[in-house]
Length: 194
Image 1 (tube, rainbow, N blue to C red):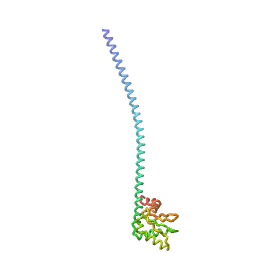
Image 2 (cartoon, rainbow, N blue to C red; image 1 turned 120 degrees about the vertical axis):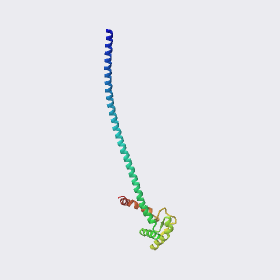
Image 3 (cartoon, one colour; image 1 turned 180 degrees about the vertical axis):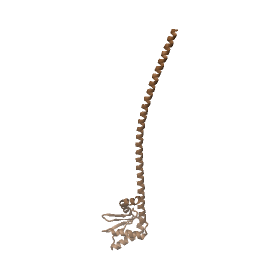
């Protein structure tokens, strides 16, 4: 039996050693798991912070793009509104009664120094409606044949173009409203949009 005792004792020592090794291995494994978990948590936190920063930058870029788009759209709408104001004014002049419109053109022509015989160009509508009467009035006022009415219409909405041998005077409504728009847009915008 002593052999049996030795065998039991050896088995008992082997079991204790195995338990000790198992416990040491388990403790070592738990330590490694704990360190790995801490390392992974730091890495995840670092990545989250990086991602959060990138998301914040993307958010700022998106907000900037949206603000720029909003500003462009607002400017487009304001310009459209200003265009409508000037278009209404143009249409008002074009819808004047014939005698009032004729008087307007006559006034503009009388304020224009006409040094020599000149050709008067009108739009198609004005050429038919007020052209001959306007030329007659100006020539009678000047007491000489100063203006000749062009038979070909000018590509304008209203007003006139006066041509001499040396120069051309553009008093078309297109040119007038182009200048007025340039000059008065800040005023009109302030009145419309505060």
